[in-house]
Length: 195
Image 1 (spheres, rainbow, N blue to C red):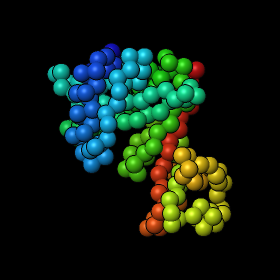
Image 2: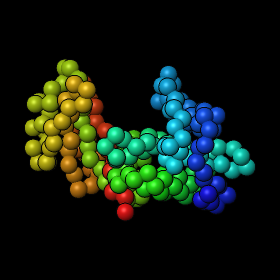
Image 3: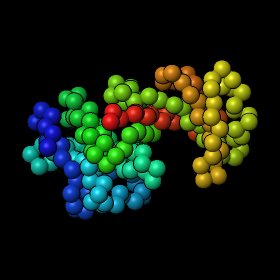
């Protein structure tokens, strides 16, 4: 099991351990987790379901899963406020990446809140801006705002999307649509894993 300072990182191995980890996430992100069903335990996914402990108390969690196409998704990375700034988040993410490699994953993707984008960039992830549209917003009205960028048009569950391809995270891109009704912008971070 990896050790980061006084913290031990290990796989979540039982449904009870996953319940405890999800309880931790609910305390860290109460508004985001409220009413959302917790993750399901899957023994074969356990290399991507990790908890960091100190004196048997959970102080950090990293959860991910393998997609059907063999790519992986980082669902959550969270560290208790009292344990931040000591490399634990980086240690959890590195352990999750190692677990993903052991499952044959070659690329990890995650959606990031703006406050965490810099952390993921320092860990080797590259960002793309995802724009999603619900009425009254229309993709064809927003695309001209990004005429200076390479755009990829997609759709997910009948929701039109634009992927703004960038060489690095540029928060002014999201500012172009801030306050527009029905347009949602989020940084999506990707990392190719070494073989």
